[in-house]
Image (cartoon, rainbow, N blue to C red; front, side):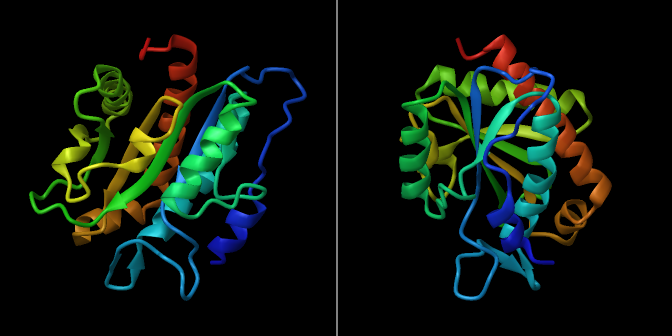
Length: 216
C-alpha cells in the first residue's frame, strides 16, 4: 500500500457544491514523517509502523469531514508538506493568519503503554483549563459512541511537552488513536470496521466542536 502517495495526493481544500462548508477550518496533522525508507515512521512493533495506522485513519477522516461540510486541510499534504513538529506548527500558524482555524488536531498512535490499556488517549496542556475542556469534549463524544477514551496531561508522558499543543496558536488537541505496544492494540488498529467507525465518530465530533465551541 503506497501510503506516501496518498499523503501527497490528499486534497488540500474541498469544494462543496451545496454550500454547506463551515466558515471555520480544521488543521489535521498526521504524526511523523513519510512511510518510506529513511523517513521517521514513528514507533514500530513487529514490523508494524505507527505512521501506517495514522494514515489509515487520516485517509478515512478527511473525506468524512468533507461530506459533513467541514473545511479541513492535511498539513502534511501539498502545498504545506509539513513533516516535522516545528514545521507543522509554523504552517498551521501561517494558515491561521488568513483563515479562522477552529481546531488543530494532531494524530498519533502509542507504543509505550504498560497498563494494558488499548483505547484512545486525548492529551491536554497542564495548567490550561481550556485545553482540558477540549480533551474532555472529545473524550465524551468518543465514549458515547462506545470507544474506550481517556484524557491525560502531556506532562504525564516521557515527552513532557507536546509542541503542537503549546505552540500552535489555534485551539489544539493531540490524540493517540490506539497502541502498538500489544497484540490486542495492533489488532484493533488493523480492523477496518474499527477504523471506519473511529473516523466517522471523530469527524462528527469535530463538526460538533466547531458548532458548539465548548472551549469558550
